[in-house]
Image 1 (tube, rainbow, N blue to C red):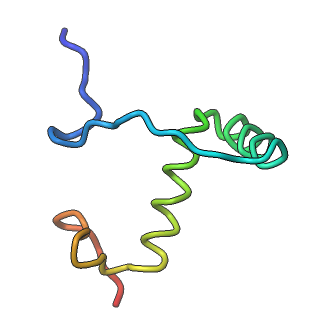
Image 2 (cartoon, rainbow, N blue to C red):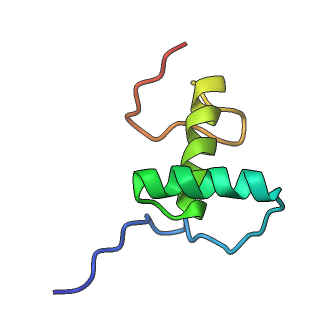
Length: 72
């Protein structure tokens, strides 16, 4: 059985880097460990949640997924 591809085609992740204080990094590691995610997945999840909270209908360059329930 072939492995399942979790990402739709065209959404390949790229390696990025960031700067953080030791305290910020420790907080990130604690949150990631609590949820069982990597630090990277935790950051992305938090950014996505905040983005859709601020822009529920998306922006000019980022549209909600087809079929998504959009609150105006």
